[in-house]
Image 1 (cartoon, rainbow, N blue to C red):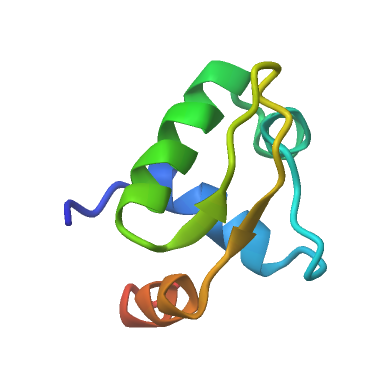
Image 2 (image 1 turned 60 degrees about the horizontal axis):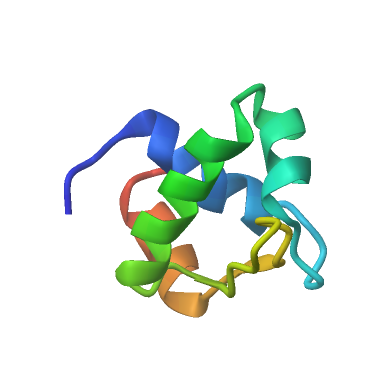
Length: 78
């Protein structure tokens, strides 16, 4: 998996969240990124099992970091 600091910001932000997770709009505001960019990062992270995210039509499905995602961030020293 390619190391991408902007992409890593999404799971890192979820790690710092409560266990309830956050939707793409909230993450976009927190990270200063467009919702579409956050959704692209979440989709990538979900493909690799770093987060769980069920996208709904509005893009408002909550994303939650997985244990694998936490381990990945530790390996990346994030």
